[in-house]
Length: 533
Image 1 (cartoon, rainbow, N blue to C red):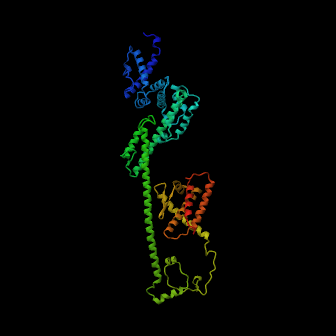
Image 2: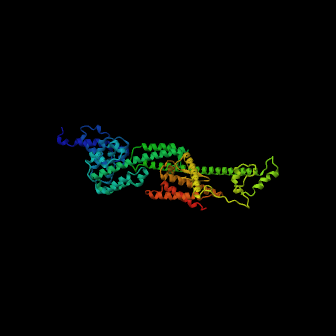
Image 3: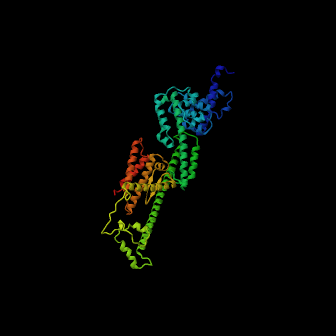
């Protein structure tokens, strides 16, 4: 029977071999690297073979350490359950952490198995929530012991990268910022200092957060792509052209590919080609959706132009009807009634000859009446030899300011009514507001102020847009040869411009996208185009 001294340490050595040997055996069989394994199954080792089996297994695993690469460990650990238990992962971490004469290859392998141990052994809630480095230290306590009270100053760049990493929400952002490369470069620069306890902890925590960020970004990209595909389907688009591909993919094929990518386990981020496909799919779908929106806007503009032309033709027809109606009414004044003789009809013309000409609009509106001799001539019917000078009363004339205010109020009411009608029937949050043969474009924030705003700023925005619409309408009518009186609306526009400028100065610092700033700039541009008549 073996003595106690001869069996000392055998149990610990056998426990380590029993945990590690299946992992090394799986790598050897999967990648055909290193020497042939001495045993296909340690369960068949007998008591007599035990001393030799322990020696041969330890020597073989030591030889395999020189052949195993980080990607061998990653593929076997993440795609099989051979190292799916905490004891086996712990044994791998302890083996690589306790090695002497460590190389860069040893650093790469230890970096992966430490991260994998933290990811696999942490509570499930840690993967979907932000955790602190001390949370990670608690999980890694079987490996590193208690958490350090402070971190070495050379780890500061890693802490700064962690702060920036939390602001990334797409795979493209993470890859463009080079977070994977930053960690590798710093780890390479540290050399032996990487194997210190605080460095191992912070790098494992950094890699854990990086893997979290990739999982979060992949989910965000996938959702963005699905929304883009829904937009394409709604527009009738059935395929998407991918870069470096001659054959476009159907929308359904893209959706299935995205679902396949998302369902894969999180691999070595930044290395697996799996994570390069998602940004390419997102870029292709975004491009197709952008082209679809551009085409939609172009079609909308064309439709607006067609409707504008149609409206112009209708207006011309209405003008023709008005002209014809006016001519008919004038003819009815000059044509004698059937019961009267021609000589009888000339009498009223002679009597009314000295009277000032009646405005054409009045002649068209009032029906012709039989002549009745007036009892007493009115001032307007007095003979030229004895003109009567009417005495103006307080109500005979409207002051210009009152008349301008009435014109502005009427015009504002008309334009705001048209604006609300267009916005409440529009299918998009931003778009064109047709005005005659042209249109103006409102931002989403302006539309929101028009429809929902209740404060002073919203009221100024509504009035500014209405003034802009009125002036644009008049400018378009001038182009068609119809003279317009700009005076009242131009003065109202300048007054609104002054009020908006004052409110913008009184308020806090505003961005260029502020709706009041947008309205002010657009109104100012129209006012510069208005002639001074």
